[in-house]
Length: 178
View 1 (cartoon, rainbow, N blue to C red):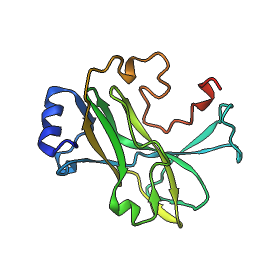
View 2 (cartoon, rainbow, N blue to C red; view 1 turned 60 degrees about the vertical axis):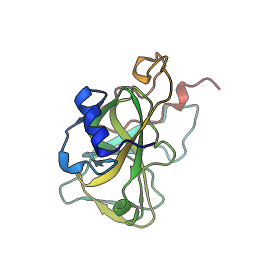
View 3 (cartoon, helix red, strand yellow; view 1 turned 30 degrees about the vertical axis):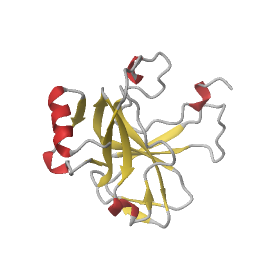
């Protein structure tokens, strides 16, 4: 079951969902539109290693926009900082974004109860496309949880992505034991 606009508003009132900045115009009938933040990043190395801390370079999207290229993997970030304390948030691309050939996540569309931060986007494109900071990029939908949460994400000692800043964050796979 997905929360409706009325239920999302109720949860915002209760403080179990937080969205900053919040704009009532971005609330759909069962989702909330999020926007592309001003920062993008690319990995420095061409070949990435899952056991290594792969470094990224941040750069700001200029006012005239930035042209994303196919076969290049970008990390972006949502303009919105969110907190979700009683629901499972999912980030999906908007249909308008998809129709431009922009994918905003490779596999990580689901958040955890207790996620607090800006969402890092895993961006790839099918053909060159100019993007702009502040453009609608995705939508958050919220699912209720069945049962008690023993430990929320923001309370886990090994939560690698808790408190994400307003800049893209690289993979922390290297922190896993394998």
